[in-house]
Length: 409
Length: 229
Image 1: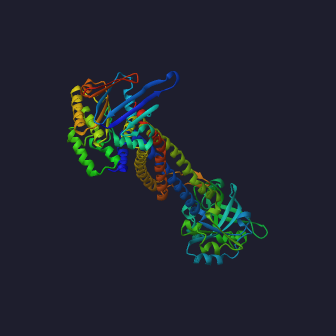
Image 2: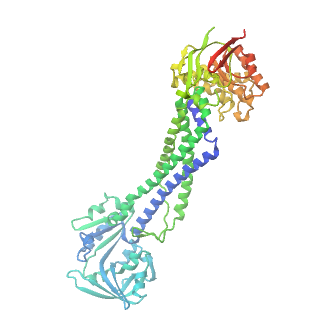
């Protein structure tokens, strides 16, 4: 055993002198690490769920509009030659589906009530490849191309006191002059997105009817489904350069929902805040443990110094003890964190009653454990444990043998 | 004979003003190589303080301690640690072995600090364990040894690195009389065969019987220095 090995041996064996105290300290550090890992995995899961719900429910990963439409929400600002864009989109690898839509504010009235809604004209087949509308139908049928078909939300149906087959009159202000146009529809389907804004304020008709109502030949919006949500951030893809022109504006989901993007940017802070709190707890817990351990071993340290151990060797021994406690804790924390992560990624956490940033969490949140982050957080905890031992170690190294061994020599 | 310990006007005071305690006053003592010396005196007479100063465990208020020709009063830090490691062996009243190390590891601890080769360490450990009657007990932890066996390990630890001086503070105080006598006989034999210098702080008549020199301290002053031969 050379000196470093001697110090290591002493440190390794010393940490289990007071097994209960050491185990409690290990538990404190492990639980702190688990809490940080859980927070990170939960935040990642929450964000992924929100992005998924936000993009896959209706919005798509990107949308194309005529420039100015989003700001003015004016039916006159529409894409006049959408077929050229359809051709372009068909040739782009990263685009798996797209859905053209007309959008307009409308008054929808039944024999019992009236309500303001946003009315979308959609191509049934294409829409089903982009949004979840088809799967949200709880009564009746999805659109099949009929002239009088209309889909409304469950809460709107309650408000209008209508059921399948009942008549609805939709009044819109047409493009090119603002003339009012009224159309008669029969409720063909009732959907439930489990999201209040959609279920009370939106209705869907076939695209042709939407265009006829608004007196336009084009569309207001083309929603895109991309191969991967990551493609929405890849500005190098031809999609962005080809479809952002003088007249067209193609935006990804981050630009379409800046509040969600802001939340995403802030998400790192929540993990950081939890991590800082946990780091402080770990540091204080460990400093306390090490000082208790050192006070109990004053005489022994006096002996070690008396027989020739250098203060710096004693310093290293204490730091090494912290390193071992930290290593065991991190190992335990990572193992338990992985188990919890694995369970959480399969089972998921149900937040179905909650709506965050306008997104209804109607799917369980599955934990997402990121290996690189886990490695960073684990190393940080280990580093904190080692740093926390510096002060107690410095205290031990400053002991004078005579003071430390008051009871003897 | 070679002087291994020399103190010159050694003083150690604690506190100041009204609370000033003069634990040691102008202690002048010279100990030669191979001596078996007992420092005696009533409790609070300064025996332990003198031993601490000689061992470099405390710093004198004034005066000098010269060990093996080196003035350790003017040495501190790592250099003093190295000096203690290489020149002084300590035996304590409460054995004070390192509880997490086995008997063998306790004995070889100082040699490890000295960087002695594994082969040489093994040889010396075997020899000293044989000399102190600890054969077969090398793997036991201190808690698995009797008081007498622990003190033998402490003696072995003090001697194995072949220091020029061994300082022993009441080494028999926690042992029964038979075990204490055996241990003293063993140390006496080692003193005679290996010519090591032993300095004891003690109240034990058995040590006084065996010591060739008795230094008496009262109120921090050396009042008597008797040689038996």
